[in-house]
Length: 327
Image 1 (cartoon, helix red, strand yellow):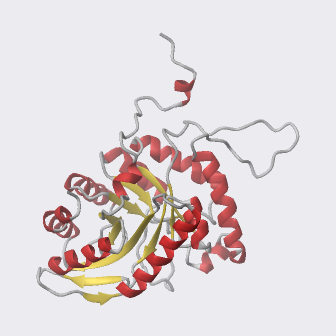
Image 2: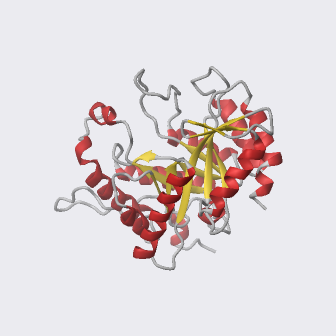
Image 3: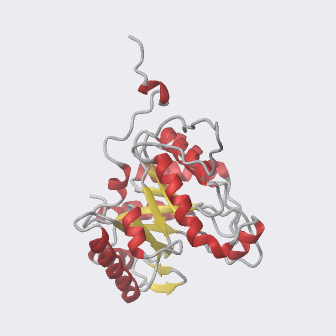
């Protein structure tokens, strides 16, 4: 029997997850836990590709909900983060083909420094390779000198972010279409193939220079940096108010990226560090419970270089922390 016309536009043997991937990561009254890549041992700033794939596979098998991949094209001695990140699309493609259940999230593709149609093509490709496990996190970048390096106008980033978001949304949404920058007389129509398995969920990572109302209206949720409890609670309250204004009764996710130095001593109390805590696992569970109670739906853990091997840390987290939240 000949294939239906619609089937000819889709990748072969690419059936989507039965449950939308965003609901496995973000769910009301629940908190899930993910990991930021790369996971590096002490003193290493350039990721070993094969080791990252092996750690990703182990995180997948242990039940972590998401792997987060950053978009950091350039390094500078002036930047506080010395890590040499792999290109996000290359790494996401490899993760898609080497993992089975875990969500893959870009945290975040710099929407203002890449053409939106290239972003859409990458998102559809990763979604296809991962069979529906991709969440497209988008940001505007927080390093102004990079705008100059790429010949972009940093002063225009807010408007550029909105325009590019619209173009990506059209291309990866439920009725995919290409919005060209220009369409001279006689120009052909364009499509992006393969078609998305389903609309690619789009997540705001940081504010992108936009209001919380704009984010609540256009994104499945908002991912922010860690703040101390009172400041984070105020931010969450602002978010909930925005959701009720623009999408009353609808679910919009709220998540945070948390830097974690996990102590060998499980009873070590939590001590604040930049964007997170140094803590033993017992105090970590308490902090995560508090986040859940205050309405946080996902925490992505950033494990900085430390004397502990990354594999040892994720094994301990899987044995003693994940069962508190992933049941």
